[in-house]
Length: 525
Image 1: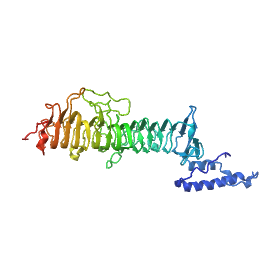
Image 2 (image 1 turned 90 degrees about the vertical axis):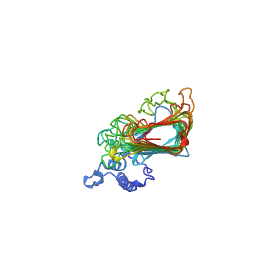
Image 3 (image 1 turned 180 degrees about the vertical axis):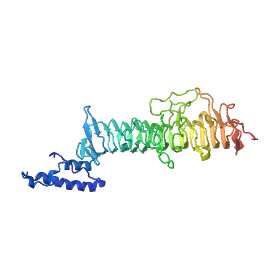
Image 4 (image 1 turned 45 degrees about the vertical axis):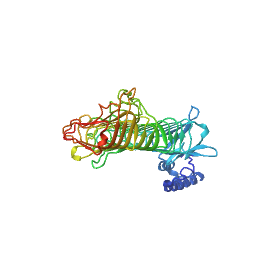
């Protein structure tokens, strides 16, 4: 038995869930201390039962501690390095005062083989945490790191569900943040399950770039309050599949509502492996530019899954101050936040304040978004639900502004509503709902819409164009009320039924016609 086994009394301080185990630990340690203080006994006949249990120290450690993490100040001056083993580790980093220091404390986890370790804040300017494999939890609370915070958690490729990880940053200040959690090669197949990551960020100040990458499980990222520079969030392709056909697919979820941020890029469900649903909410914030890329447009995207998709993108109460370039309107697939962004197609895509590119089966809501510095450019894939399900997806834009609005909707059935919105100073308004095959029923409502376009020296004239599905079985309806259009390309501006056999045009306010034509609506007078 080791004579130098020491565990601090502070190991389980404040951890109520460990109280029963802690009592067991104290009783065991009392017995061990009593045994250690006893005089050696030569006679075998007088040996106690405890003296013939050489594993009692290791047994108590195994009961109480899931794993161990080691802390060190690395050979590079000013770097605090925390390394976990392959166990299920939980650590908390909290600022203490008098003197200022950070306490690295384990919860059912030892730190340098004891309960915690204190490190002076003045000893380091960067923090690197690598938790290794296992199911890990990392919490950082109320302290400042001058340069960089990097957090990495991993999963076991043999047993990926052992890597469900949680990372929380609460009132942390730093320049650069990097989080990489469970971002390994995914498990695939009809019942595939991958480790998930839950990232919670509350009231932080990250002045430079923040990068958050999670893996192929059903992940969640919440950013609430605080101020950020550029931020890139990528929740992976979500390669998990629903085992029970009666249950919905696992969901990748992002809820983004900081006080302010610069260029924001959010990617979810993007990848060459078809994935599950996603839920993106960006709300109550001010940003420089906003780019959202979700899903992919592989032909078998929905067919590979036990149940079909029903994803959502919601952007509400957001002020956008500038435009962003570097994205194309010619393809569906873009990897946001990576190195595979495509160059701007100058002939067709002015810089956008809000850029959304979504895969199949996505409902879109944009509500009270002010982006007059650039265009609102949104593309949505197909509604691949079988007609017998009667699933109609929604595309709603309301109470919003932009220099121009350009929308591209895929095949299938959609309800499309553009309400109480205005376009001014850009290349006008286009709504193309033909998709690739021209199929599906589109119900379109244009209500209190103002379009005031100008001739742009680079991108040309402004125009107003609504184009409907062209398949012979399409049943399209367009309702117009109080739409005012003033564009420079009058000959190219129209609401075009595109020869669909069952198109219906409803003009609630005849004054709304000014500035565009209405064509190809059979039976309309």
